[in-house]
Image 1: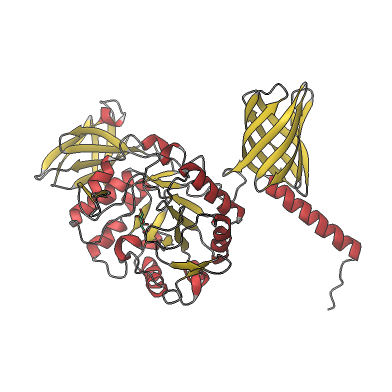
Image 2: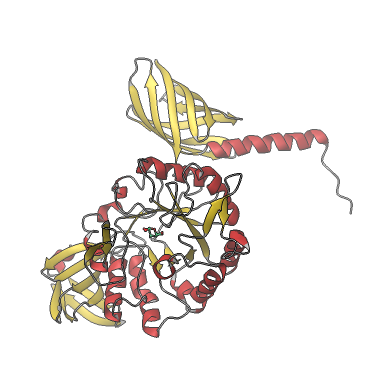
Length: 498
Ligand code: GLA
């Protein structure tokens, strides 16, 4: 049957309405900035702008009060908004360019200028990412610069075959060294020997397995391994990543010289969002500029809190070049104390990737490492060779009861609630009102450790059910405390449910 085409005038209308709608949609989002009134008073403003079927709504919050958005229109880059002043209405007439809304406002007697910048939040492509800590695999801890298409595909197959995907591991992240240079147009060039079919082919393969694709770059001019960094190419790279189907970007901090950390990460988040693709942003500046204080605000989904982890139990040593530091697992753990309140759904403290299975610790130490990372609500990024895992390592990484603690929907990071020399109790509040508890013995001989209900925030007399998450066994109801003998460098991990 021959399809009848629409009359020309109607087609034109459809195109015009379509493009107006596209503009209306791009105006929606969360904005932060200031209004300056005609007496030069500066008013802080946060605006959440929503758009549905061409109609605007939302809320303007300011130091002068909160005002509901009750109407508006967007044509080209012009955005006009009407907000409720209770009996009358105020207006904003502005232009939206590169995520910045600049113009004038009028609110009763008061008039002036507005300058608002779009931030990650409701309405942006990255809104709602990482509601629980990201889980997956990353190439760095085991393979360093030795990355290739074959290895990554093999690892992805292993994520599926080993049951890791079923246990929640979905990101397959290529760390440093996939990139070699920039071409004449400054586009990033992928190593043609190691990735002969390019990055989109890798992304397509991962997506065909139901997995997600992560890459790595750096906020400075070069990555830590000396490959081209992202500085000055943030928007160009973001468009490229989106075209490859990238779902996760780890952004490092080598060679960043005098750059401002917060501004640099806000910039890459804005660039990723401008690509239109939801991409998790992993801030990797090693805690140097206290990213827990600003990481959420700039749209980071996780931020490293420390220098790199090393595959050993504890201790902190200088690197051979004298710089600080190579951190054992416990050294990283100790640096998390006090940071717990900064984590929550969508924005997590990152104590670095897992070393489980890489050979530098005993199985018991790896069980401790995994349990503690779960208590910390840490991103769980395995860093071992999944194609060749001993069953003991497989069983650690896929312990669903421990993973459930990490992924608990409340999104609370746990904390150290008791310490007596080498003996510690760590606890994490769970959504159902229960607690996950780790008894940690850092010492060199077996010891008894007790978790007292008061230390968990419960009344001492409360009767609660205790379940051992490594033995997969209910231990019955207890009141006052739970005690267990804990092996040297080991943990006992339980849930306590009233
Ligand atoms: C830094 C990061 C590591 C890793 C390497 C890659 O050291 O902290 O996690 O990404 O760079 O060069």
